[in-house]
Length: 325
Image (cartoon, rainbow, N blue to C red; front, side, top):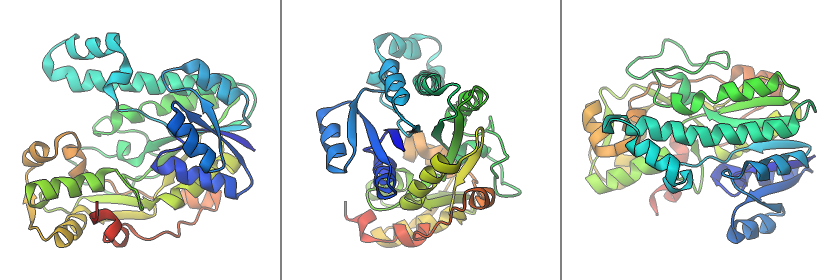
């Protein structure tokens, strides 16, 4: 297949690109800079100039492809443009700024999904998108069971803002697009990781302590990035329209265990903190540290014959690659 991939040079996207090429597919990667184009060429992919802020480029790239994997997402405020940025900061009470910023970012994501979907409408071609299982977990609640592929986004989750765009993908699945959603674990780990665990390590270095909230028994799921890459390919090749798939290998690792690895590696104490203290110390990702987010991928493994084989979360982060930066 000729596959249009957004986010093809990112931590996950670069692994997806390698996996697709290794299995005989041709990758056309979205590139908004000469540097990104060079990285794609070096990986054996074809660069395609465009960006998330240019829906026409997304539509044209998808229209010329046999399928699409959409991994790109931006948290960059300058990319919102002056008008939307002013609206987010000046459009109401200061306490509402985070929510208005998130809505503006989600609008960019929604427009990208709609541009890709419009290019594939009625063709039966695949569109694989990415979300997070974190969007299924409620803040302040201990989960009674691991989240499954049948569960919908939870308005009480700090990850809900992004999860609501699943509705856009589901809508295109009803309009002749083989659109599916891969929900990734909060820790997609491996060499080059720049996600939440490295953020925790950086905060522990700065503060001189590795923290967890309360008793630290809240659970995070995890998946190695190569296993995640394989899952995106399988969803592209064999996924069902409207399906939700879970990129989860470790179903639930107590967050205190993650903090203990960080503390041991850095030689700093491991301490329990309140949520308010964690928010003050960790900033925007403080609420995620307290979330209980066990998740299952049993249905995904059965439907797509996906078998995660990469290292487990705790053993993988207990390595020099995470602590030599």
